Image (tube, rainbow, N blue to C red; front, side):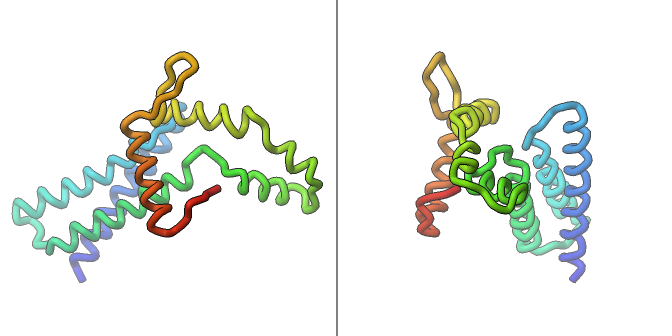
Length: 161
């Protein structure tokens, strides 16, 4: 039982530190996903304490911390990702006005909103690089694309958004 309390405390401290760092950076106009690296610090403190015999935790405690961190990371990515899906755009339009015509719904979608804004977001995130009029996937972008592909294959979800 105390193992769970120690892991929960370490994760909670990392979470609070992550929120503080994120908000400070946001006030400075910096939007970055790198603030989640604070969870690695929490894990490092746990490991150092374990190696110095300050904590007697089973290996499963470290696995639990890692799994909780991965869930938090996925949740953070889902909430903070700037792109909005077309389905989300339609639902938001219905939230503003309960009845929509087909013309009103098609006006939601422009080349700028559906294509160029998303390409710019991929370039800023470092997932795609641009050289003139040509775009290239980066190593990070390729990794994420493979992860999405594996997820889609695993859950038989070949279409999205």
